[in-house]
Image (cartoon, rainbow, N blue to C red; front, side):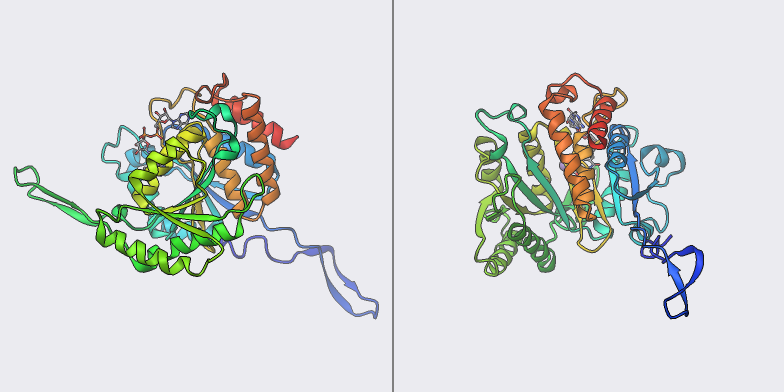
Length: 387
Ligand code: NAD
Ligand code: IPM
Ligand code: MN
Protein backbone atom coordinates (compact mmCIF):
# COMPACT_ATOMS: atom_id res chain seq x y z
CA UNK A 1 0.00 0.00 0.00
CA UNK A 2 1.22 3.45 -0.82
CA UNK A 3 2.35 5.11 2.42
CA UNK A 4 1.03 8.52 1.43
CA UNK A 5 -2.48 7.13 1.09
CA UNK A 6 -2.42 4.67 3.98
CA UNK A 7 -5.16 5.36 6.57
CA UNK A 8 -5.47 8.96 5.49
CA UNK A 9 -8.91 8.76 3.87
CA UNK A 10 -11.75 10.37 5.80
CA UNK A 11 -14.16 7.76 7.19
CA UNK A 12 -17.93 7.82 6.94
CA UNK A 13 -19.76 7.47 10.26
CA UNK A 14 -22.22 4.63 10.91
CA UNK A 15 -25.07 7.10 10.40
CA UNK A 16 -23.88 7.81 6.90
CA UNK A 17 -25.57 11.18 6.41
CA UNK A 18 -26.86 13.73 8.86
CA UNK A 19 -28.79 16.92 8.21
CA UNK A 20 -27.12 20.14 9.33
CA UNK A 21 -29.02 22.87 11.22
CA UNK A 22 -30.54 24.19 8.00
CA UNK A 23 -31.82 20.73 7.07
CA UNK A 24 -29.30 20.19 4.28
CA UNK A 25 -27.76 16.74 3.97
CA UNK A 26 -24.14 16.61 5.14
CA UNK A 27 -21.58 13.85 4.91
CA UNK A 28 -20.80 13.11 8.52
CA UNK A 29 -17.18 12.16 9.14
CA UNK A 30 -15.63 10.61 12.23
CA UNK A 31 -12.66 12.54 13.55
CA UNK A 32 -9.62 11.45 11.55
CA UNK A 33 -7.69 8.53 13.03
CA UNK A 34 -3.97 9.39 13.20
CA UNK A 35 -2.41 7.40 10.37
CA UNK A 36 -0.19 4.54 11.46
CA UNK A 37 3.40 4.86 10.35
CA UNK A 38 4.47 1.96 8.18
CA UNK A 39 7.72 0.38 9.35
CA UNK A 40 9.79 -2.19 7.47
CA UNK A 41 11.59 -4.50 9.87
CA UNK A 42 14.71 -6.29 8.62
CA UNK A 43 16.36 -8.23 11.50
CA UNK A 44 19.15 -9.58 9.22
CA UNK A 45 21.76 -11.94 10.61
CA UNK A 46 23.29 -13.16 13.87
CA UNK A 47 22.39 -11.08 16.91
CA UNK A 48 20.30 -8.80 14.66
CA UNK A 49 17.66 -11.56 14.86
CA UNK A 50 17.78 -11.44 18.67
CA UNK A 51 17.96 -7.70 19.40
CA UNK A 52 15.37 -6.53 16.87
CA UNK A 53 12.51 -8.57 18.44
CA UNK A 54 13.33 -6.82 21.74
CA UNK A 55 13.27 -3.41 20.08
CA UNK A 56 9.89 -4.33 18.56
CA UNK A 57 8.53 -5.36 21.97
CA UNK A 58 9.52 -1.97 23.32
CA UNK A 59 8.09 -0.13 20.32
CA UNK A 60 4.78 -1.95 20.82
CA UNK A 61 4.78 -1.09 24.53
CA UNK A 62 5.32 2.58 23.69
CA UNK A 63 1.86 2.76 22.11
CA UNK A 64 3.13 4.62 19.04
CA UNK A 65 0.80 3.94 16.10
CA UNK A 66 2.93 1.67 13.92
CA UNK A 67 2.18 -0.91 11.27
CA UNK A 68 5.07 -3.39 11.06
CA UNK A 69 6.04 -5.51 8.05
CA UNK A 70 8.86 -8.04 8.28
CA UNK A 71 11.42 -8.83 5.57
CA UNK A 72 13.71 -11.88 5.57
CA UNK A 73 16.62 -10.20 3.77
CA UNK A 74 19.91 -11.57 5.05
CA UNK A 75 22.27 -14.53 4.90
CA UNK A 76 19.60 -17.28 5.30
CA UNK A 77 17.59 -15.94 2.37
CA UNK A 78 20.72 -15.45 0.28
CA UNK A 79 21.85 -19.02 0.92
CA UNK A 80 18.36 -20.31 0.10
CA UNK A 81 17.66 -18.57 -3.20
CA UNK A 82 20.62 -16.23 -3.91
CA UNK A 83 18.47 -13.14 -3.31
CA UNK A 84 20.08 -10.23 -1.53
CA UNK A 85 17.57 -7.50 -2.36
CA UNK A 86 14.48 -8.51 -4.37
CA UNK A 87 13.88 -6.67 -7.64
CA UNK A 88 12.43 -3.23 -6.92
CA UNK A 89 13.28 -3.69 -3.20
CA UNK A 90 14.64 -0.22 -2.51
CA UNK A 91 11.94 1.51 -4.56
CA UNK A 92 9.34 -0.49 -2.58
CA UNK A 93 10.86 0.57 0.76
CA UNK A 94 10.97 4.18 -0.35
CA UNK A 95 7.41 4.14 -1.70
CA UNK A 96 5.55 2.03 0.84
CA UNK A 97 7.25 2.71 4.18
CA UNK A 98 7.85 5.63 6.50
CA UNK A 99 10.97 4.13 8.10
CA UNK A 100 13.08 0.98 8.18
CA UNK A 101 14.41 -0.76 11.31
CA UNK A 102 17.39 -2.99 10.66
CA UNK A 103 19.41 -5.43 12.83
CA UNK A 104 22.78 -6.32 11.31
CA UNK A 105 24.26 -8.20 8.36
CA UNK A 106 27.27 -10.49 8.27
CA UNK A 107 27.50 -14.28 8.41
CA UNK A 108 30.54 -16.56 8.27
CA UNK A 109 28.67 -18.75 5.75
CA UNK A 110 28.86 -15.84 3.28
CA UNK A 111 32.57 -14.96 3.31
CA UNK A 112 32.22 -12.51 0.41
CA UNK A 113 29.82 -10.46 2.55
CA UNK A 114 28.00 -9.73 -0.71
CA UNK A 115 24.55 -9.74 0.90
CA UNK A 116 25.61 -7.19 3.54
CA UNK A 117 27.09 -4.98 0.88
CA UNK A 118 24.01 -5.16 -1.33
CA UNK A 119 21.43 -4.80 1.44
CA UNK A 120 23.03 -2.43 3.95
CA UNK A 121 25.26 -0.31 1.73
CA UNK A 122 22.57 -0.62 -0.95
CA UNK A 123 20.01 1.05 1.31
CA UNK A 124 22.44 3.79 2.30
CA UNK A 125 23.62 4.53 -1.25
CA UNK A 126 20.62 3.77 -3.44
CA UNK A 127 18.10 5.40 -1.11
CA UNK A 128 20.52 8.33 -0.75
CA UNK A 129 20.52 8.22 3.06
CA UNK A 130 23.39 10.64 3.24
CA UNK A 131 23.61 11.28 6.98
CA UNK A 132 24.65 8.47 9.28
CA UNK A 133 23.85 10.08 12.61
CA UNK A 134 25.38 8.32 15.61
CA UNK A 135 24.68 9.83 19.03
CA UNK A 136 27.25 9.06 21.71
CA UNK A 137 25.86 9.36 25.20
CA UNK A 138 27.12 7.85 28.43
CA UNK A 139 24.13 6.78 30.53
CA UNK A 140 25.96 5.84 33.70
CA UNK A 141 29.51 6.52 34.92
CA UNK A 142 30.09 2.80 35.59
CA UNK A 143 29.82 2.05 31.87
CA UNK A 144 32.72 4.26 30.78
CA UNK A 145 36.18 2.68 30.74
CA UNK A 146 37.77 6.09 31.44
CA UNK A 147 38.50 7.24 34.98
CA UNK A 148 36.41 10.06 36.43
CA UNK A 149 34.10 10.47 33.42
CA UNK A 150 30.44 11.07 34.13
CA UNK A 151 27.32 11.11 31.92
CA UNK A 152 27.48 14.89 31.48
CA UNK A 153 31.00 14.48 30.03
CA UNK A 154 30.02 12.26 27.10
CA UNK A 155 27.15 13.63 25.04
CA UNK A 156 28.17 14.20 21.44
CA UNK A 157 26.87 13.28 18.00
CA UNK A 158 28.81 12.03 15.00
CA UNK A 159 27.59 12.98 11.52
CA UNK A 160 29.12 10.44 9.19
CA UNK A 161 28.85 11.02 5.44
CA UNK A 162 27.06 7.90 4.23
CA UNK A 163 26.94 7.85 0.42
CA UNK A 164 30.48 8.58 -0.78
CA UNK A 165 34.14 8.17 0.22
CA UNK A 166 35.96 4.87 -0.07
CA UNK A 167 32.66 3.01 0.33
CA UNK A 168 31.60 4.04 -3.20
CA UNK A 169 32.84 0.77 -4.74
CA UNK A 170 34.95 2.57 -7.27
CA UNK A 171 38.24 0.95 -8.18
CA UNK A 172 39.41 -2.43 -9.29
CA UNK A 173 41.96 -5.18 -9.09
CA UNK A 174 44.42 -5.73 -11.90
CA UNK A 175 46.67 -8.69 -12.60
CA UNK A 176 45.02 -10.54 -9.74
CA UNK A 177 47.00 -13.45 -8.36
CA UNK A 178 50.26 -12.35 -9.95
CA UNK A 179 53.30 -10.72 -8.38
CA UNK A 180 52.28 -7.50 -10.17
CA UNK A 181 48.80 -7.40 -8.64
CA UNK A 182 47.36 -3.89 -8.12
CA UNK A 183 44.28 -2.97 -6.05
CA UNK A 184 42.75 0.48 -6.31
CA UNK A 185 40.00 1.75 -3.94
CA UNK A 186 38.99 5.24 -4.85
CA UNK A 187 37.87 7.91 -2.42
CA UNK A 188 34.99 9.80 -4.01
CA UNK A 189 34.08 13.18 -2.53
CA UNK A 190 31.66 15.53 -4.26
CA UNK A 191 31.06 19.14 -3.34
CA UNK A 192 27.33 18.43 -3.07
CA UNK A 193 27.90 15.39 -0.84
CA UNK A 194 30.38 17.12 1.44
CA UNK A 195 28.32 20.28 1.68
CA UNK A 196 25.05 18.60 2.61
CA UNK A 197 26.54 16.58 5.48
CA UNK A 198 28.47 19.54 6.87
CA UNK A 199 25.38 21.74 6.64
CA UNK A 200 23.28 19.06 8.40
CA UNK A 201 25.82 19.00 11.25
CA UNK A 202 25.62 22.79 11.66
CA UNK A 203 21.82 22.78 11.44
CA UNK A 204 21.71 20.07 14.10
CA UNK A 205 24.04 22.01 16.39
CA UNK A 206 22.03 25.19 15.90
CA UNK A 207 18.69 23.57 16.78
CA UNK A 208 19.40 20.87 19.34
CA UNK A 209 20.34 20.66 22.98
CA UNK A 210 22.33 18.17 25.00
CA UNK A 211 20.58 15.77 27.38
CA UNK A 212 21.22 18.15 30.30
CA UNK A 213 19.41 20.98 28.44
CA UNK A 214 22.53 22.98 27.59
CA UNK A 215 22.82 24.20 24.02
CA UNK A 216 25.03 22.58 21.45
CA UNK A 217 27.67 25.12 20.52
CA UNK A 218 30.43 23.50 18.45
CA UNK A 219 30.95 21.60 15.22
CA UNK A 220 34.25 19.83 14.63
CA UNK A 221 35.19 18.68 11.14
CA UNK A 222 37.53 15.70 11.08
CA UNK A 223 39.65 14.71 8.09
CA UNK A 224 43.16 13.67 7.10
CA UNK A 225 43.86 16.66 4.88
CA UNK A 226 47.54 16.69 5.78
CA UNK A 227 48.03 13.46 3.84
CA UNK A 228 44.93 13.05 1.66
CA UNK A 229 45.17 16.50 0.18
CA UNK A 230 42.71 16.24 -2.73
CA UNK A 231 39.74 15.00 -0.73
CA UNK A 232 40.79 16.83 2.43
CA UNK A 233 41.18 20.07 0.50
CA UNK A 234 37.57 19.88 -0.67
CA UNK A 235 36.34 19.15 2.88
CA UNK A 236 38.37 22.11 4.16
CA UNK A 237 37.04 24.53 1.55
CA UNK A 238 33.43 23.48 2.01
CA UNK A 239 33.72 23.58 5.81
CA UNK A 240 35.00 27.17 5.66
CA UNK A 241 32.15 28.22 3.38
CA UNK A 242 29.37 26.59 5.41
CA UNK A 243 30.63 27.64 8.83
CA UNK A 244 30.46 31.29 7.76
CA UNK A 245 26.66 30.89 7.73
CA UNK A 246 26.65 29.84 11.40
CA UNK A 247 28.64 32.50 13.28
CA UNK A 248 26.97 31.49 16.57
CA UNK A 249 28.48 27.97 16.34
CA UNK A 250 32.16 27.52 17.16
CA UNK A 251 33.85 25.60 14.36
CA UNK A 252 36.91 23.42 14.89
CA UNK A 253 39.06 20.95 13.00
CA UNK A 254 41.09 17.87 13.93
CA UNK A 255 42.96 15.25 11.99
CA UNK A 256 41.42 11.83 12.50
CA UNK A 257 44.45 10.30 14.22
CA UNK A 258 44.59 13.09 16.81
CA UNK A 259 40.82 12.93 17.26
CA UNK A 260 40.89 9.19 18.10
CA UNK A 261 43.62 9.83 20.65
CA UNK A 262 41.68 12.70 22.20
CA UNK A 263 38.45 10.67 22.34
CA UNK A 264 40.01 8.12 24.66
CA UNK A 265 42.11 10.65 26.59
CA UNK A 266 39.34 13.13 27.33
CA UNK A 267 36.01 13.04 25.49
CA UNK A 268 34.58 16.07 27.29
CA UNK A 269 35.20 18.76 24.66
CA UNK A 270 33.24 17.02 21.87
CA UNK A 271 29.82 18.22 20.80
CA UNK A 272 29.06 17.63 17.08
CA UNK A 273 31.62 15.86 14.86
CA UNK A 274 31.26 15.73 11.08
CA UNK A 275 33.44 13.49 8.97
CA UNK A 276 33.64 11.20 5.97
CA UNK A 277 32.29 7.69 5.60
CA UNK A 278 35.28 5.63 6.71
CA UNK A 279 36.51 7.90 9.49
CA UNK A 280 32.94 8.05 10.80
CA UNK A 281 32.79 4.27 10.91
CA UNK A 282 35.99 4.01 12.92
CA UNK A 283 35.32 6.97 15.22
CA UNK A 284 31.89 5.58 16.16
CA UNK A 285 33.30 2.21 17.25
CA UNK A 286 35.81 4.05 19.47
CA UNK A 287 32.98 6.26 20.70
CA UNK A 288 30.79 3.21 21.39
CA UNK A 289 33.43 2.06 23.87
CA UNK A 290 32.96 5.32 25.79
CA UNK A 291 29.26 4.48 26.16
CA UNK A 292 29.81 0.96 27.48
CA UNK A 293 30.48 -0.91 24.24
CA UNK A 294 28.96 -1.61 20.87
CA UNK A 295 25.85 -3.06 22.50
CA UNK A 296 24.85 0.43 23.68
CA UNK A 297 25.22 2.45 20.46
CA UNK A 298 22.36 3.62 18.23
CA UNK A 299 22.27 5.13 14.76
CA UNK A 300 20.07 6.53 12.02
CA UNK A 301 20.73 6.66 8.28
CA UNK A 302 18.79 9.73 7.36
CA UNK A 303 17.81 11.86 4.40
CA UNK A 304 15.32 14.41 5.71
CA UNK A 305 11.97 13.98 3.96
CA UNK A 306 12.79 10.53 2.61
CA UNK A 307 12.21 7.05 4.06
CA UNK A 308 15.14 6.66 6.45
CA UNK A 309 16.77 3.60 8.00
CA UNK A 310 17.66 2.98 11.65
CA UNK A 311 20.13 0.36 12.90
CA UNK A 312 22.29 -0.24 15.95
CA UNK A 313 25.98 0.53 15.38
CA UNK A 314 27.07 -3.03 16.13
CA UNK A 315 27.26 -5.89 13.67
CA UNK A 316 25.95 -9.45 13.72
CA UNK A 317 28.54 -10.56 16.33
CA UNK A 318 28.60 -14.27 15.28
CA UNK A 319 30.30 -15.49 18.48
CA UNK A 320 27.42 -14.12 20.56
CA UNK A 321 24.57 -15.18 18.29
CA UNK A 322 22.03 -17.74 19.46
CA UNK A 323 22.98 -17.52 23.14
CA UNK A 324 20.54 -14.85 24.39
CA UNK A 325 23.49 -12.77 25.60
CA UNK A 326 23.60 -9.87 23.10
CA UNK A 327 22.80 -6.48 24.55
CA UNK A 328 19.51 -5.24 23.02
CA UNK A 329 19.91 -1.64 24.29
CA UNK A 330 21.62 -0.33 21.13
CA UNK A 331 18.69 -1.64 19.08
CA UNK A 332 16.15 -0.31 21.58
CA UNK A 333 17.72 3.18 21.60
CA UNK A 334 17.77 2.98 17.80
CA UNK A 335 14.03 2.35 17.80
CA UNK A 336 13.59 5.43 20.03
CA UNK A 337 15.61 7.43 17.53
CA UNK A 338 13.28 6.21 14.79
CA UNK A 339 10.20 7.24 16.78
CA UNK A 340 11.64 10.66 17.41
CA UNK A 341 12.38 11.03 13.68
CA UNK A 342 8.77 10.06 12.90
CA UNK A 343 7.44 12.73 15.25
CA UNK A 344 6.64 10.56 18.29
CA UNK A 345 8.87 12.47 20.69
CA UNK A 346 6.94 11.48 23.81
CA UNK A 347 7.11 7.74 23.07
CA UNK A 348 10.82 8.10 22.28
CA UNK A 349 11.46 9.84 25.59
CA UNK A 350 9.57 7.12 27.45
CA UNK A 351 11.87 4.51 25.91
CA UNK A 352 15.02 6.50 26.68
CA UNK A 353 13.92 6.96 30.30
CA UNK A 354 13.22 3.22 30.65
CA UNK A 355 16.65 2.36 29.23
CA UNK A 356 18.28 4.78 31.67
CA UNK A 357 16.45 3.10 34.53
CA UNK A 358 17.48 -0.37 33.30
CA UNK A 359 21.12 0.74 33.22
CA UNK A 360 20.94 2.33 36.68
CA UNK A 361 19.31 -0.78 38.17
CA UNK A 362 21.67 -3.10 36.22
CA UNK A 363 18.76 -4.81 34.51
CA UNK A 364 21.21 -5.47 31.70
CA UNK A 365 23.28 -8.08 29.87
CA UNK A 366 26.78 -9.19 30.93
CA UNK A 367 28.68 -6.77 28.66
CA UNK A 368 27.33 -3.88 30.74
CA UNK A 369 27.71 -5.47 34.15
CA UNK A 370 24.29 -7.12 34.37
CA UNK A 371 23.25 -10.76 34.64
CA UNK A 372 20.16 -10.85 32.43
CA UNK A 373 19.58 -12.30 28.97
CA UNK A 374 18.71 -10.42 25.77
CA UNK A 375 15.01 -11.31 26.03
CA UNK A 376 14.77 -10.55 29.72
CA UNK A 377 16.29 -7.09 29.26
CA UNK A 378 13.87 -6.42 26.39
CA UNK A 379 10.93 -7.53 28.53
CA UNK A 380 12.04 -5.45 31.50
CA UNK A 381 12.37 -2.31 29.38
CA UNK A 382 9.09 -2.98 27.56
CA UNK A 383 7.28 -3.41 30.91
CA UNK A 384 8.76 -0.15 32.18
CA UNK A 385 7.71 1.66 28.99
CA UNK A 386 4.19 0.21 29.20
CA UNK A 387 3.70 0.97 32.92
P1 NAD B 1 30.42 -6.67 15.75
O1 NAD B 1 29.88 -5.33 16.03
O2 NAD B 1 29.45 -7.64 15.20
O3 NAD B 1 31.01 -7.29 17.08
C1 NAD B 1 32.26 -6.93 17.66
C2 NAD B 1 32.23 -7.28 19.14
O4 NAD B 1 31.49 -6.28 19.83
C3 NAD B 1 31.50 -8.58 19.49
O5 NAD B 1 32.31 -9.70 19.39
C4 NAD B 1 31.07 -8.31 20.91
O6 NAD B 1 32.14 -8.48 21.76
C5 NAD B 1 30.72 -6.83 20.86
N1 NAD B 1 29.29 -6.59 20.58
C6 NAD B 1 28.75 -6.16 19.44
N2 NAD B 1 27.43 -6.03 19.56
C7 NAD B 1 27.12 -6.41 20.81
C8 NAD B 1 25.90 -6.50 21.55
N3 NAD B 1 24.72 -6.14 21.02
N4 NAD B 1 25.97 -6.95 22.83
C9 NAD B 1 27.14 -7.27 23.40
N5 NAD B 1 28.32 -7.19 22.75
C10 NAD B 1 28.30 -6.78 21.47
O7 NAD B 1 31.67 -6.47 14.76
P2 NAD B 1 32.56 -7.57 13.99
O8 NAD B 1 32.84 -8.72 14.87
O9 NAD B 1 33.67 -6.79 13.43
O10 NAD B 1 31.65 -8.01 12.78
C11 NAD B 1 30.83 -9.20 12.76
C12 NAD B 1 30.02 -9.20 11.48
O11 NAD B 1 29.10 -8.11 11.51
C13 NAD B 1 30.85 -8.99 10.22
O12 NAD B 1 30.29 -9.77 9.20
C14 NAD B 1 30.71 -7.52 9.92
O13 NAD B 1 30.92 -7.20 8.57
C15 NAD B 1 29.28 -7.28 10.35
N6 NAD B 1 28.93 -5.91 10.72
C16 NAD B 1 27.70 -5.50 10.31
C17 NAD B 1 27.25 -4.25 10.69
C18 NAD B 1 25.88 -3.83 10.24
O14 NAD B 1 25.16 -4.61 9.67
N7 NAD B 1 25.47 -2.60 10.52
C19 NAD B 1 28.04 -3.45 11.49
C20 NAD B 1 29.29 -3.91 11.89
C21 NAD B 1 29.73 -5.16 11.51
C1 IPM C 1 28.70 -0.04 10.31
C2 IPM C 1 29.40 -1.24 9.70
C3 IPM C 1 29.37 -1.18 8.18
C4 IPM C 1 30.13 0.06 7.77
C5 IPM C 1 29.93 -2.44 7.48
C6 IPM C 1 29.17 -3.68 7.88
C7 IPM C 1 29.92 -2.32 6.00
O1 IPM C 1 30.69 -1.36 10.20
O2 IPM C 1 27.52 0.17 10.00
O3 IPM C 1 29.31 0.67 11.10
O4 IPM C 1 31.37 0.03 7.64
O5 IPM C 1 29.50 1.08 7.56
MN1 MN D 1 31.12 0.02 11.82
